[in-house]
Length: 472
Image 1 (tube, one colour):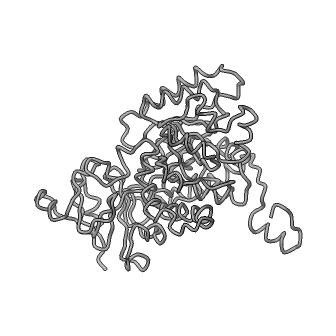
Image 2 (image 1 turned 60 degrees about the vertical axis):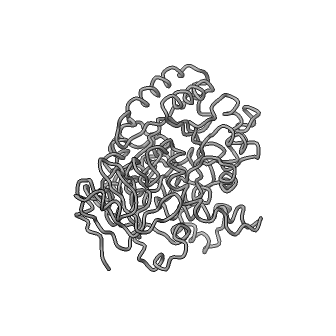
Image 3 (image 1 turned 180 degrees about the vertical axis):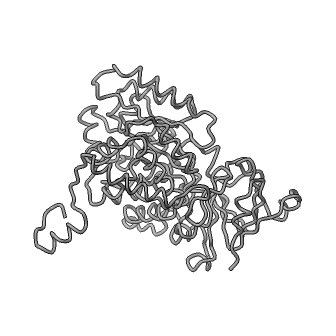
């Protein structure tokens, strides 16, 4: 079996890459090639044409490989990686009992290490872009930016703009001043793209919700807000405003193309109409629904109505192929079984929203998510000469159902080889993991984390001893 030449792939551009196929929006194109240079796709087309028009470039042949867009994680919390497994078996709204105290226990080194660890996991899973919804750690958000940049991943970086805890508009000017500076801070940055964030609608005053929407729209950025994730949040909004969260955001003028609504699981027909009419984007997070949610977002209905959405991990696990599979699987169980829909998006829906749709949702649709001339060279080389994919009849759908991160040979971000067979190319990944393990133990020990469910081994022991409880 021929293996790609790593040294040739890591060479400075321009590079002429000739895989077996290139994944375009309309499907795999056999015998196509790409030219990458200056961080972008300089040309995409039939291999024989590119070889003719670029005679000075020696083709790098990639037998048995598919060149496809990198995955886009439309919803992540990079500084929560130290406690990812603390969510297992927990009921909804664990952010109050786990994430807030855990992030509050991070210092600068541990916040940087946690974010870089999450970025490494994302790269290993084929993600070339992650949208971070803002950290609660008491550090400069540039710590997270540095971690993403050093890891080599593209990051839509949220700045938390919560200001409702004061009970009035007192913090409004200071919050907006920080928001404006944040949006300007990363202008021109190659990998970091500024975003604003509000944890949940009730965490910000109405003035701040309106103002952040305006600032983001003016800057071509997005505002990330957790919306309609849990029943408790919907009920709080009904009690406080007489409206559901999305309805409340619409009333105050915060819906629109600049809003990235995370989760959006509990939607009425009217709320679907509001999303469609306003151009608001959604992050569909199917694994989060399975692990700790109250419902599954009606993503097949969103796709049918033209609602913009991407797929997000919510920090659960960084594997783009498994995320796309979960997106289809959740729709099949939640909606397809009851209606006899055996297709549920026909595979391509979830693959497309895992990259191009996700890039659009996080505000980078004109920059990444598609293999096309002028777009950022954020892509994967996937080994399709494997037992899972070699006997291909429908490669896009097979990538959704049978793909996995072990088949990713290389990950490129901004035209640079960032990961080779699961390991970073220019920094020490195993050393980071070892340091993260040390810092995580200390941080979790300091944090006032409250878990409802015991660990699996304790739960097993209680079960075997007959000491059953509702927590099991």
